[in-house]
Length: 121
Image 1 (tube, rainbow, N blue to C red):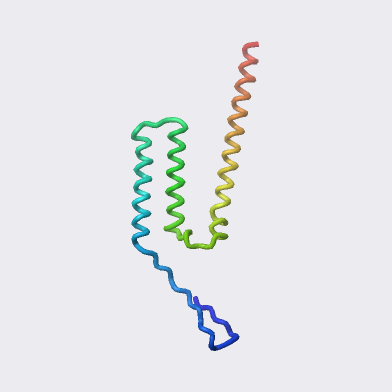
Image 2 (image 1 turned 135 degrees about the vertical axis):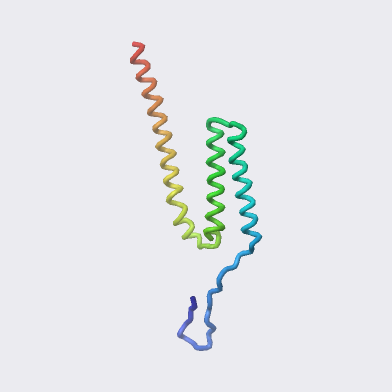
């Protein structure tokens, strides 16, 4: 892709060079992904249960997805506006789902109290 201005023939033509990233960066990310996958496996190996188990699994999953998107999908080198455009809507949806889950838990507990008091009276 070449950009040129027609105002002066003496101005140099700006040419976009293809980006070449060092292989060491990709190898470091692969090692980090392997470590995160190993930690995710160890959550099952040590029989962690409940909120701790699911929190760790989701944290490791989000970290791996973020690394893959940043490096292998070249988001690290994109403009910040494009990164926000891609990552902000799913993040907002996750927040809304968390709010709905919290409200659903509240309603479930409220109904449990209401129906248990109706049975005893």
